Image 1 (tube, one colour):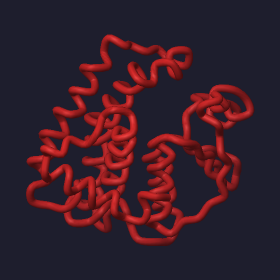
Image 2 (image 1 turned 30 degrees about the vertical axis):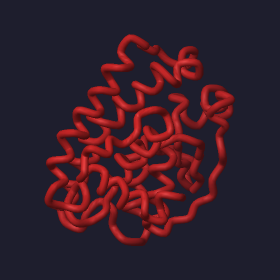
Image 3 (image 1 turned 180 degrees about the horizontal axis):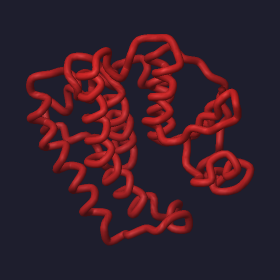
Length: 203
């Protein structure tokens, strides 16, 4: 297998997940800033032009970070990051989807439509007028999350999981692009610091 890797929070999710599981794969870097992901030969691998992408031994391709991590979960040895029981897996998948829809997407598009506009305006439809509202939506959901984290260490319970990897990678990205962690949210702040203290966060 080979992982096509680049800068950005989505590749970081897969690298963090792999580090937690002790998985090592050959990587090929794709220059996102130069737009190499939007032209051949990368478009022959992933026509959507998004990163990362996992090429399997038979040549088939898996894209989307959750799908990549779930494939590796099912095919590689190591500690589970998706939960050991059906109930635990349901909670991890629930919180992973919640993070994606409620924080990662509005945070990411808030950046693409404002600070990232010079890079993204020729690559996708951008709505600069929506940027501030999207950023506010992400912060609203994190304010709600603060109450949910008052009685547990991680999103889906007591164990660090894929849900935590997804959300913390995007929030770390937010720290770099003008959407820092709101330190007036004590439980979110403590959770974020726990995630960032893990060695895998530096993968």
